[in-house]
Amino acid sequence: MIKLHELLGIKYPIIVAPMFLISNVEMVVAALDAGATAAFPALNYRTDKELREAIEQIKSRSNKPFGVNLIVNKSNLKYKQQLKTIAELGVEYVITSLGNPQETIQICKPLGIKVFCDVVDVKYAQKVEKQGADAIIAVNSQAGGHCGPYPKEQLIPMLKDACGIPIISAGGIGNAAQLKSTLQLGVSGVSIGTIFLAAQEANISEDYRNALIEYGEKDIVLTTKLSGSHLTVINTPYVQKMGTDATRFEKFLLKNKRLKKYVKMLIAYKGLKQVENAAQKATYKTVWCAGPAIENIHAIRPLKTILGELTEDLKF
Image 1 (cartoon, helix red, strand yellow):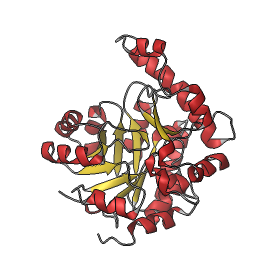
Image 2 (cartoon, rainbow, N blue to C red):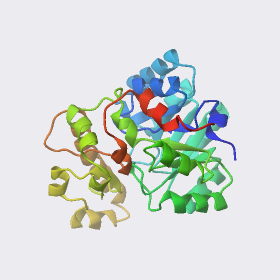
Image 3 (cartoon, helix red, strand yellow):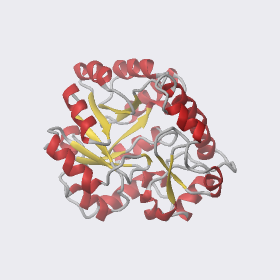
Image 4 (cartoon, rainbow, N blue to C red):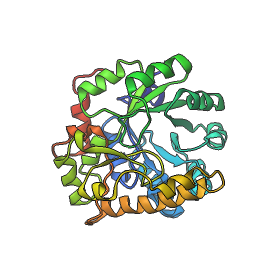
């Protein structure tokens, strides 16, 4: 199985994961300069003009490979234009999430743009492999943000037995020992998010920064109230007050085939606006995304320092 750093021509088999509202040009460039690759969510930019500017800025500052994360389900009303822009400007790879990546694969691959697909189980992994995905990103139960149902120790062997394309593990890596043990499972590379929330380059509020240091693994909980799907967040007093489960009425609507799409769109819009407000300005409605790897955050440091600490004892 080809390794991620060989596939992309980089030093380390590491993706600094795309993080909603967090990933930015400075973080991506810092990761590229330090020997990893990085991706950012297209939805971090409100307009097509801003998305274009972000891609062009990164390209003007580095010739190293980077990617864009694309939400490919119907809840992303900007999907068609985002895909068109990515195809026009060109990036090394696209990471697809929360939907069917077939159209993205069909458009990107002839242009030489690789497509990596988020998966949480074997069934979906086999589906995207047949569609032509270049790699799968195995999102496990310890991932920050949207997570899967299986721990990496269970998910990776299942995927290795069922699939023939490179596997990138996402979730549960916060230090060098965890990185090493994950690579020993035989994956091509890893995608790491939570610990890079504490990078100096991350554009988050001071309260969010303090929370990353103050809280630990025991404070991470799953909620379905923000997107309709499982999302890991810090269990702040506000999260405790609002609860972590969708309401009975929301659950009822989510079971309705006709309404499900629109209900999830509404839940996601309302919930992610809360995440946006909490991430970027002071608010009592503190909904901060993070995974269990938060246990390894003790200070705010340059991204290069965090990555260097992760990789100092490893040879690639």
